[in-house]
Length: 500
Image (cartoon, rainbow, N blue to C red; front, top):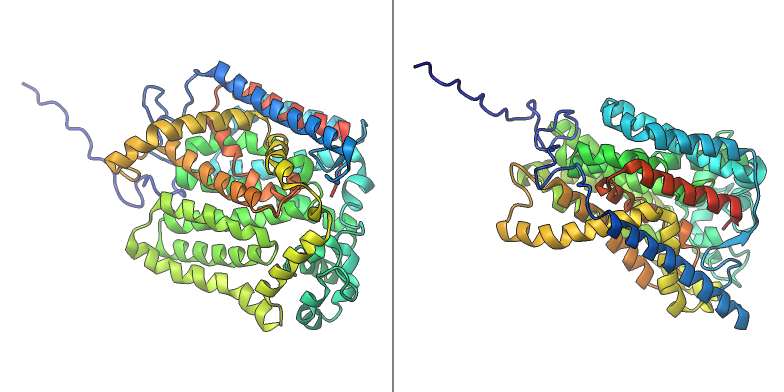
């Protein structure tokens, strides 16, 4: 009798398709078999419930809009023209209209197939380019000057204070003395509301010959578009390449692009996103040198993030979620965590030695916050109307994806916790994706409950909202949902004049 052939021994090790190494294009533990309960391929079920969830999101926004109009009819305590958005009703077309329609149509038609077959590194570059094209085209609906070149030159914006940074060390030492309204030469709202790394970015651009609103706008859009690639890198490291590829077109065609062009918050979004992405790579990279390099870069960007926006310290929740999911071995963690700490310390050390006190500035900011419109804006309205703004920010497809994510969380997490299998030889990548999204949702909820985000969250929450979009990887029929996403963005940008 001829003996049965022996099955090849499973490959193990860093060079053999390690399921925890995102730099390896082959991912044997990333299942694609629809019969597998952990498959990355969404089952074509629950479509009606997806529509119900999307309709509920639309109704939430409608309720916030009608309630806002009713409140404004009595007394204008909301301080926005088109509640719950900081925008004006202004139907219009612009030079970006044809480009936006072309980018949307091309992404809907070819995005899912290209995301499925492009080599990984090319997919990252294509996603960055596609996201930039989408943001630029939407911004140009308002025209070059109104949509890009003048966005960062208004009386509230950073470019108003460039000349006050001629002596950078001196300005940093006296920065907190100009935060409160009533203080000598108090800072404009956006400068007062952020640590000095935000205005310093535009000061340094000016110093290298890229001064003015046009360069500032192009910088924010180009850098902000890179957030798309950062989220994909993180999703691949945490939840497998299959989910990352399915999420890619939704990250490119995000309705959030309406508010990323041209906004400094788009730039903040990319810095924070790459801090998380490099953190994920530090926990999953194949070699010690790669882990240490990624950790150092992540620490630097996390430190910079804290000096770009006070609220972005909440990204610690997302970072903690990533660390929980990748669960590096204690020996590996000990090898790269000191590099992360060293990188993180750089910007706090530089700014502190320059005379800027982060904690003092934050407490003064809270006082300044209530000196302005936030002092009269009702918490009871904005605590839920902010979430209605987020519906437009992430789109109806994301609302449907979050519904599916909630189902996964409720059904799979208890079983995995009982079996202690959050990390095993065949991990549940779908559950990992959901937990990553849940960490972002938790950070966003904390920002909402804090009361420090009453209105204008369609820009303020960009860094958090982009991490909800990977939930769309759970949806079947991606082209239909991509079309819904594009429709939301195109309608908002053509019917409203957004601003901040």
